[in-house]
Image (cartoon, rainbow, N blue to C red):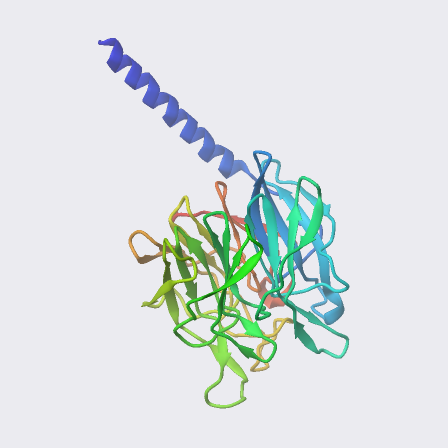
Length: 357
């Protein structure tokens, strides 16, 4: 046998073995439970010093009351699966419905709202950045239009997009673009459809996808808010990050939902979605219609290359709702905390497959 052919066989066999080893290691990866039960927490994945870590920032605890909202912050070591607590998010009060993403070696945290003892809710303009090297928080330029319950995503390790969301008294169509290099804001092409909050989505390869959420009930205040079933895709201009070409998408697999866990992956060319509920609610898991909300068991994805929806699992075990994102890792889709059935706030960390089994 020619030496070149032998070399090719050995070369291919080596990489097949490496790929199989990676798959087995991913299958065996079992992260610890979170240090505390938490829901509506912002999450992000960051590579620092060649090492991947996940973040869980703020959220609401098991009591699901105003005083159960926390500013606690945790890091998940993506190799060992162990959690550690870091300095809490700055501020006198914790927040919910904030969004997080990692760019330029920092974890960035945006917006959200605080709740006082009387139940008054205030959307905040805060921008916080965590540097894992110095283990310190820094303040960024305030969000021009304060928002909570928005969709977040990033491109080019620089531009962070805050897509729609709730601002003080109403849902907005604003697309606000934060330039992490220059610490300044740009105004993107507004959303073309219904103004929503609690929608879900992400960015992959300069493509924004967002779905569902809640909107004001056009029939009146009973209930005050209802689900939206609109799905949209936005193509970001390569030369001008503030220009977005929006296109309406067909409905995704499963019913329209609220606070789905979602996140984009440049490597996979996909935006992933899991859980959520078809009954919008405030922060305690009881719907605006007065009925308890329950999580959906559907996990799906949008393939930005094919432009099509993909069903991953219609019967995801132990589904959850009340998320502000998910972590897309080599090990799978990582969901940290959330609300399980019967509105139970959990410390469980679920790792879901990224492809149909």
